[in-house]
Image (tube, rainbow, N blue to C red; front, side, top):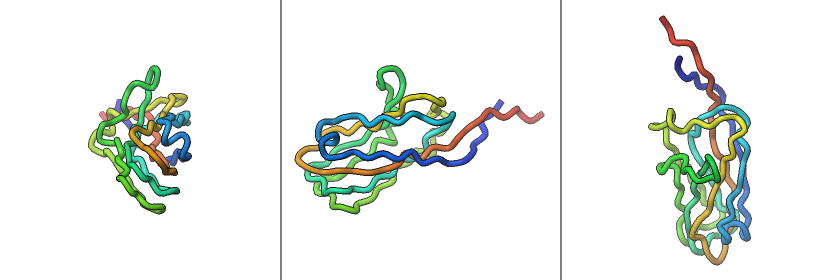
Length: 131
């Protein structure tokens, strides 16, 4: 058996200033078996002191999906600043199962800011191995 990649899905999220500064995880329920391709963000309110966004899953949301997908938002990032962080080299290890909890966890932000974004996933299925 091998993995067969399907359609891309975009799992949107919003992190308001209160949740960003408090480090509150934003959770998404994964709609189908998939692999994570990227995280894309746009600053909606200027970020004074930057920080990181980490994708986590697993029991108690303790497993980082990929260290390469940890996104750093810079100090003094202005409204409209956009970023895409991807990890296409390790797709086979970034598997999620339908119903999994996926969290976007902000850390180290201070003073001000708000962010919107999307986690890009690609649906997967098992395909029979070719003879």
